Image (tube, rainbow, N blue to C red; front, side):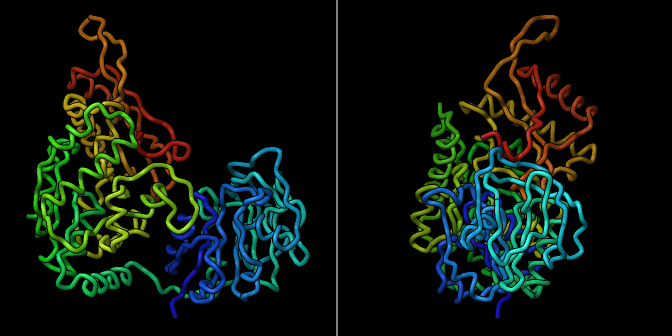
Amino acid sequence: MKEEILILDFGSQYTQLIARRVRELDVYSEIYPYDIGIEKIKEIAPKGIILSGGPSSVLSKDAPTISREIYELGIPILGICYGMQLTSKIFGGIVEKSVYREYGKSVIKIVKDSPIFSEVKNESIVWMSHGDSVLKLPEGFEKIASSKDCEFVAAHNLSKQIYLVQFHPEVIHTEEGKKILSNFVFKISKAQSTWNMENFLENEIKYLKEKCSGKKVVLGVSGGVDSTTLAVLAHKALGDNVVSIFVNNGLLRLDEDKEVLHNLRERLGLNVKYIDASKIFLAKLKRIVCPEKKRKIIGKTFIKVFYSGLKDFDYLIQGTLYPDVIESNSVKGPSQTIKTHHNRVKEILKMEKQGRIIEPFKFLFKDEVRKVAKLLDIPDDILNRHPFPGPGLAVRVIGDITEDRLNILRKADKIFIDELKRTGFYDKVWQAFAVFLPVKSVGVMGDERAYGNVIALRAITSLDGMTANWAELPHSLLDDVANRIIREIKEVNRVVYDITSKPPATIEWE
């Protein structure tokens, strides 16, 4: 029987992180909507159930809820944030709307021994994000931790194996969050470590061979970690029956088309068809300034170019990742949309309904894909490339996209990346890039007053791309980059550095 932790999603943007943290423990986890139904849960027969947080208030008339019968299955349950409030309400506790929304770091005081806090130090730092609070625990539940601003920060009902925490153990800001989740997975749910990337790779190769045998299969490659790993995986499973199509959409970085083709064909031995569609894409994007429209146009045009490149095929394999899905639509729950990704446009969704889309990485995070890449012996310089958005520089030229703006941005981005590599900081940050801003600022160049373009630099550190902090690069490095950009690109006279974390910002500007 498969060892699985089932996560019921109430719409939290952190739900995917819960799955990620459980899988880091080499235990399989899967996310389903909160209203999955009792029969489906019985069919899955999970070792444990985690109730996620969510944006709703349990006091609302239409608040999402679950059947009390789920708590009677004898399966250990961990309720996080909304999951705690909902459980308390279902069992007859009192939940109230807080006067102030509690958001950010807090320190908990453990007041009673509990398996969920086994080997967790007292006065541990946790991350809060809630608008409702439990005022009175239900009968049969005991308080096990409190904080300065929250009396019932954690509780348990040992006889029913129910554990409740008001904070988010899945986020990195919670100091011992991984230990808390580990306690639930292993000590309480008695799950075994049976899921890892080796098993994932073996299963995906087997799946592709069974599903795609004798079929025509295509996939798009960009040269990034995700698509390259996907292409190598598909090639390993299906050989030259897979055609990797590399589309130059005119939104690539400086000389990226030549570098990508060399890596894919010469170094990795893949069957790659190259299509230069740069003029088509740029014509479609002319005078388009809305980020959502840009993404949809790029996605739609990409599919048309695909059809022109290879008219007859049975399956399209995509390198969609967890963050792509959670930010576009709910994966298996009511999570709120942040932005539309180019690989979720109407044409793709239509093919998906026809059963012609295969997304092997749909429930993987970036670092998990890198583990797969390592198992496939993909060279380190390809494996460690920074993420690059599917829409390319279209979402880094803010506003109208023109060839002149793209060329300015390409040069600035190349300087930034070159300096990061020269100083050894490229591998120390998750992602770094330049952004062209649609404003001009006054400056003095050559003793003359002049208006020039503004370039923003962005570098972030992250574990998974779901949350991120701005990278504290040395001032001397930023100074060198700014001076080079202004000296070598005559159209630019000002460089700024983005020091916004995610959230509240996204990693990309558009």
